[in-house]
Length: 147
Image (tube, rainbow, N blue to C red):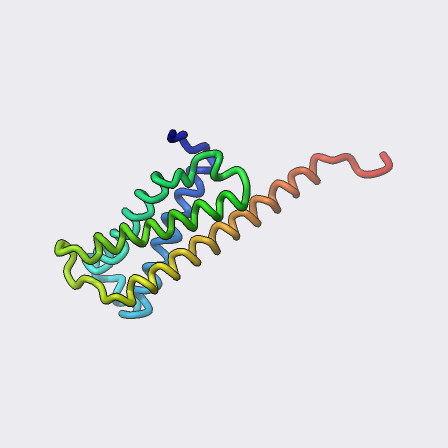
């Protein structure tokens, strides 16, 4: 049922988690300025639930399994599904009594949009770079025409 991710899958996992940190961190800066990043409790309570969410959702979806990293379409489908799940899990944690402050209902919509679009953007960029690199590597290995 679950396959271990290959090296590419592990790189994508690291990128996905860093993207979530950047997206949610950007929201903190947008609302509180750079000073918002100096309040460790605020940062952990805001970013942490969505990091847990992406970790749980990607395992459930199988986002890093070779079958889901083989093509661009498969990658984008699986990361979109994982993003939706990640926001769901993140919001359950964020609105629990354990987290001070909770969240107003528009927060969920904003997180759904920004995390999903942010992850799709990052993955599209990763796919483009990978295709460019593999094309450049293939070109470097070819003999010049006419020789």
